[in-house]
Image 1 (tube, rainbow, N blue to C red):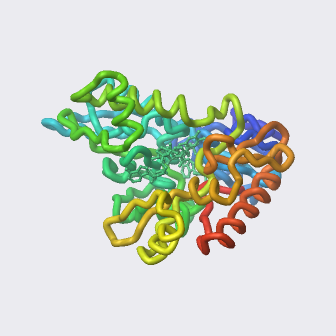
Image 2 (image 1 turned 90 degrees about the vertical axis):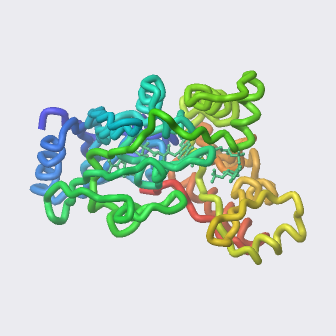
Image 3 (image 1 turned 180 degrees about the vertical axis):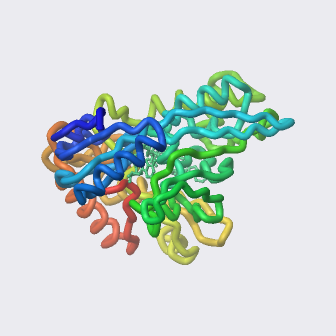
Length: 338
Ligand code: FAD
Ligand code: NAP
């Protein structure tokens, strides 16, 4: 294979920037190249991993195998009345696609502006931000089934999307490689500016009746102001999921802490803010060597320089234990640990 590289440091391929060497790395730009790479690894009995933008992966050891970097590019829109069906290659950069769809006047993605990474990874954890998740615009995806050695199509139900969840984190982990995703957008979209940060930003911008471009610009401003930029400090975004707990658990915590953020869910359970729980345990800004907790975002673990994936994971475990001890809630990791 032409594009094959040997002994590659994954620090430059992941936003946490932890050192770990992959014995082989290859970029794939088509389904044919993907099949070729898988065959090459199969002939050598090599373990295979897939990487998009590396913004949700922390390697804790060297990868003795082949890392496939997904680069398939495609943007195929089909306008049907006020509905726009758009098929996207798995290697497309998510935010570039958001900007492109908004520039065309197609709504649906604007609240998810500036989420790092690729289209192919978006269904993996059903990415979401500011009240919208990709499941709300999802139509279907195509993936290569490594077991059956063929491309299969999956609809939303088959993907089993949940809160930062999908089947790709479970049964289909490592079996399915997503090659394209189709979304349903709209030329007469419903604006969702209900999140406090977004509505406040729009007010500050002097916008009373926002367009999708206004919402995107507001989200971009808020994110640039509030979230640590991986180009400046290594991080993988939120390290833990917000816990969704029984109503009684939330009531118990709010009896002691009336200020604890709590968001009722449609199924009667309540979403708590993991950042608040971590902050209450005194972790904000904490540091263990070069592994740390961001000083403004307690949900974001950071690499101050030379932290290894294991250093980050050890800090994450200490945080999980202390939150569990104090609140009886075990935080679940959102980041994929390799
Ligand atoms: P990677 O990190 O490369 O991969 C993530 C996982 O998906 C890995 O297990 C990988 O093997 C698998 N994978 C990747 N591509 C494929 C494929 N084609 N087929 C099958 N499996 C694949 N997430 C949110 O939901 N909302 C946010 O607002 C958000 N904000 C963030 C902010 C920052 C600063 C950072 C660093 C991260 C943030 N994230 C957020 C997390 C991250 O951006 C998303 O999870 C994103 O979808 C990861 O995309 P990626 O291409 O970088 O995936
Ligand atoms: P925030 O506005 O400070 O809010 C803290 C948490 O409370 C968020 O995680 C959010 O849950 C929840 N929340 C706030 N307002 C809500 C509402 N009206 N209804 C329901 N839940 C509400 O959050 P932030 O840290 O600045 O992040 C802003 C957005 O970007 C969030 O949607 C967050 O998910 C997303 N983000 C995600 C990552 C990641 O890596 N996954 C990283 C950075 C930012 P939700 O997370 O469920 O929205």
